[in-house]
Image (cartoon, rainbow, N blue to C red):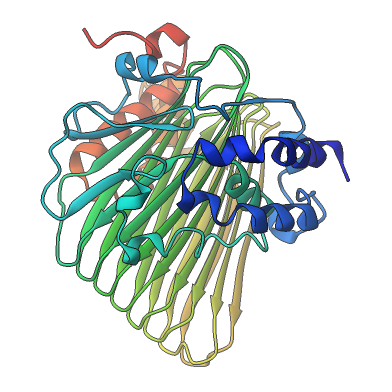
Length: 449
């Protein structure tokens, strides 16, 4: 057994009672099975399993990070004065400080919309909600999910009752801030009842003072005719390591949209598993990555068409410079009987420097004969003719490159239905290309006044 795995097994064995006592029955139930699965699986290597071929997980988890098992390290004060780059988009704002949900003093949720702490309020969860915890995010085939299930002690539950449609987005700000290197394990459970609608905006930040390792496992259950939109914006530091696993199950005629945007980071690895389990379900994924220096961003998506008449549309765009490494692997699985499937998958990528690398692997696996499925992948550089044309008309070369890169990413941004979020992200993308994001820790930790 490798040391990077053994340290977590030993910690779990010696601190199991402390972990349970500082959590809830809901989260404690699957821990033992998760431990057994983690010990059996071990951390993925770049040789096995196939889905982790582009990221060395063992190396990422090898450093000895501290854990907040006593729930004693509080970043609530920092969260209170933190100013996110996406302010004033909504009044429904919730903070997660390190790995602890910090309930706001006063947030007026509409009737039929609930936001609970898994640790403090798990006893209040109705059975139709609590039954989803750990069911979609099975620990049997993913070591990161198993590790998260072993150690996560708090999380957020968002439940929208059947027929309730919430137009205003719910914003969840994840902030890592501590006095030493820290590992945070977070859980999110989203349940949208039949005909319900909800929009969630996740913002990930670090204070930049230490190294942080974050795992987050999110489960989304979309009932028949429900609509769920998940937007995520990453602005973490170069010392940040982030593993996010998203599991989605959709019933008939439901619609789920995800839009992950990486602006600044260290190492990021995202796994997305989607099951289109009901007839007529629709899944859309639009992602954008901007990376430079030594940054590493790896997205892996599986869209499982298990029912007939379902649709999926996947578009990811990367702009890489410096020595950045980007990876995208997308697989569409069409099962027997899933006739009339309509699937589109596109991976388009720009390498803006000779040392940047992009690894892309689009895949189709089809077992039905009446389908329409397309996939494509491109890796290239900026259009030199367009760049020459702009420079000939008086635009400085640096500005011309910025405009071309922004236009490339803009195809993703234009698919965001929230106009205010779309406009703000367009501005942040421009600032990112200008090198104006993440210049100093103080800018991100200043007070609101």
